[in-house]
Length: 485
Image (tube, rainbow, N blue to C red; front, side, top):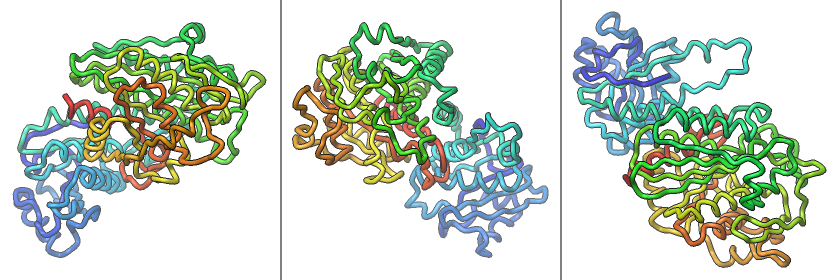
């Protein structure tokens, strides 16, 4: 589904279904109620249509306006309206419209809605409309017959906000496609092809992908070690976009399938480990969206991509490897592979002179225990960067919760026979330990680490994404750059 805008009264929307938000205690919008001959006001007075958050009702105008049906959805109290509440309400209205057989939806934007609310009301239906059914030989009615168009209607000109939002959500849904692809389809090489395809189609975006020989020549020992157990070749993907603004580097973990290696995972739900490249997908698609929007930032994005497989060639517990910045690591657990490939990515962007660094990774199961599927874990050595990410998260609903870095955690990473160990025998503060390990490779650059293991998949507490791939991080990274432009 794609979004467009229409400037004019709600009653003039070109759609079979018109969605309108109601605030608690505020009654029906006067102009629309007048166009409907007072029917909407009477529906509110009867108590059938409510302003309570997420409550819906349907009115059939019977020719009073062009739309065949009007769906009301509660936005809660006007003083409590946030972008996230608007996003959820809009997603709920989409579900009701889909169930009613709608093909073309229009949303009557509330009077006085600022850009963040317009953006959120546009995002909700676009995200909720996502389906991944390319491998189904026959499409079910729900996936094949849902609404195909979304029109945002306002007396004001909101065309540019809607246009930009449509682009960003297109890329978030593309990240969800990448997450959903099976590992036999999305190999590291295929992910690199996708990223280079983005660079080829977007003006100002450049890309390259290093294969095994160049990875070896650059002494990327972390990526080499994780990749050596698989017959699929690794790739180190580099995207560059110079929009003329401040410098930012993004690093995304892309393990296209993670068995755990020799330290193999339990078999239950291992099929979901195709999504261990979610950080890489988010970085690729956020970079593409930023370039398409022409945002003013000098962006360097790198995505180390590999499988993590057990074989006679696989890295073993106890092996010692050397990262590209020269530091040595004893691999105590091969299922703590993400930090090894991220180490090479972080060292690369630090050596390139990055001004700020953000890495995005499905890194630790421990973060799910701590924060569930509501927050991503945020670790940072820089208060300003941390605050900027927190501010952006409030608008996008991709929430972050800052967790501590501490010298005690750093001490746990110290090795006896190498500079570092990738897993501590103490098994303490696992998410903070992983972040402390990563910090060793940023060379003092302002840096933030986003552990998205809990929010990248099955975010079913969010009506606009629900089960499966969420594409988490695309909107957050775009909004961070937009707010700092």
